[in-house]
Length: 122
Image (cartoon, rainbow, N blue to C red; front, side, top):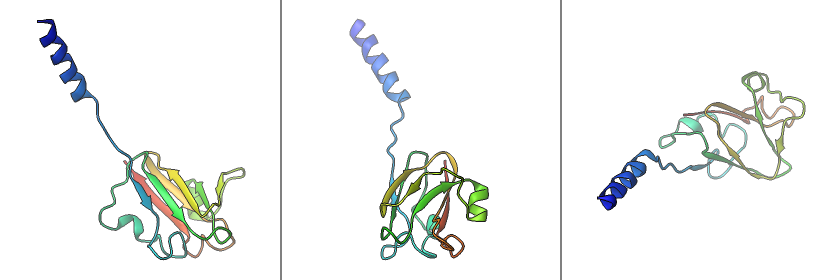
């Protein structure tokens, strides 16, 4: 009887644990990555269903771009908050949070000319 109860308990625990695996997405197209206009329609391409804890990989030539997570206002105005973390390796990996996620390049005029991204994660 104890063995059956233990088996039932393990079965119930197994069903209550939700196994999720995070996905990595390389931003932009294969040739350019994180660059001018590459991310405009990229989030809506087929096969992308972003979830919290998924990782965006920003690939670009270091020294030519950077990546900064910003607020909606920062995205709209192409500005980053003072003290915001600036990623600049050329192979930056940033985890998504639930809800809207906004990213820009802070090099002069880059955001204005399309080096920015908005992604919604569920």
